[in-house]
Length: 354
Image (cartoon, rainbow, N blue to C red; front, side, top):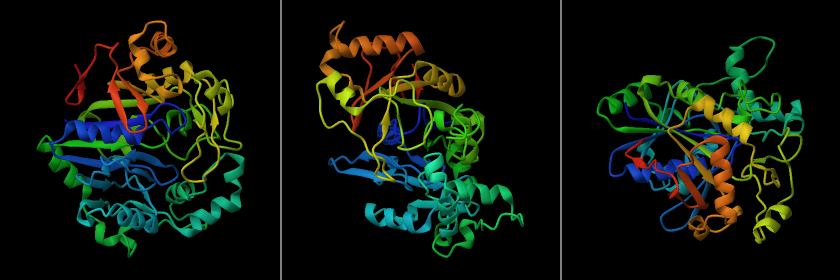
């Protein structure tokens, strides 16, 4: 059945939103539904057809062409004010935003709890309240944890958007319509298997985790995309180990480019950057078994024209990555597009590798 899942293989900011949008566009004109799991503790960025940059936290980046239905399933965490703000910014058709009645609501108490707990400093959390909302849901009204866990149907602002999204998705899959799940963050941040606890997020960020949050069966999945970047990043502060950590100046020196510094979408802090970690990427591949692997930020290594020149910096980097982790199917040389890897013989064929 036609379910695609897009997940990250490092510490987030791999370009999942761009890739999910690329899938939407490649599946067009087929009917597509985009499912946004997780919460607004990280930003997703994509570029509209007119070139406008969208940096979203609650709405999925794959929706910016305004031609898909957006579903927030029971396993999602929604900040009502932020959601309405992004719907307004996008001028998105409100009848195309559908929320499970059982989705959890992020409240001011959740954000305040994270600030008071000190996790924004101790583990590099963005302090968006998602972790506290997850904790409150799992605590199930325990008397020792004074945190609310309202559902979407209990929230006045979200109630008009609530639907039986399980039945809706079942119906669309039975008609062979494409469902794309836009995952959040990356494998190295996964709570259960990322390997960097406690500097981790509050959820499992694998394809299996995203599928569980979406409330869909593993038998419905025919397409998994794992997104990587040439130079992995972590957020600022005490955010955990980073293989081969180096400066942005060093990355620029290698490529002969300036202004490569990156700042987090949520906290606007300078990101940490490190060398490509084949061991981490390999573990992410083993956990997700992707149909395709995307390698973004290739422009941090060199120019696209170098792909045709064996021995160029781009080809040497790509050849080394392929030797270490296996096939790479798509490449990103810009924030707005991904191309087929001309050195790979596995091409896009309507959702699965051919």
